Amino acid sequence: MRDFLYYALLLLLGFAWYRFGQQQLRKEPFDENGAPTQGLVGPVGFLMTTGVAGYCLFAVLRALVRGEVPCVGKGCAGQVYTLATNTSAYWANVFFMVWLVLALGYALYVTLKIWFRK
Image 1 (tube, one colour):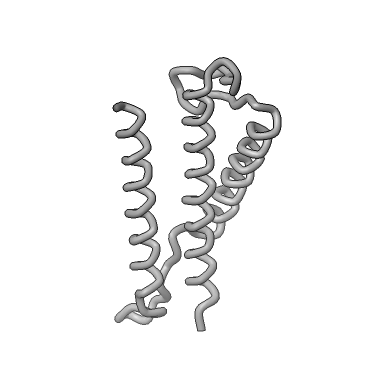
Image 2: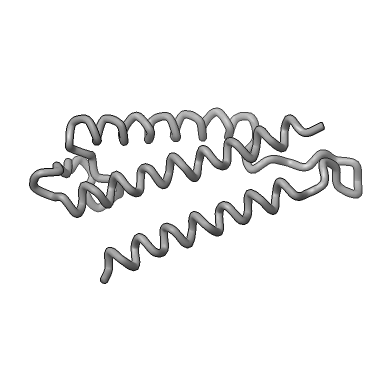
């Protein structure tokens, strides 16, 4: 039941993130004061988000190829879950990293769309 709640909350958070991005894209290019609409992240944040998303994508691909994934979190730092012995924890960490890649990638997409509007 706990796993179901975990995955349901991640999907709900992903839906809320998507709706927030769509709301940002529907805004006018300039506000009433003439200032341009800001993206989700600024230039430095964009670079940092790209780096984190790239690292997570690399970790997911590595986990799928090798069958082992490092634990994502504070409570289990340094622990490695393998597909053979810790199937549930392995897939939970892989799913979370895929979710992070998609969420950060969507933030980058929304930011680029806002930056390059006409």
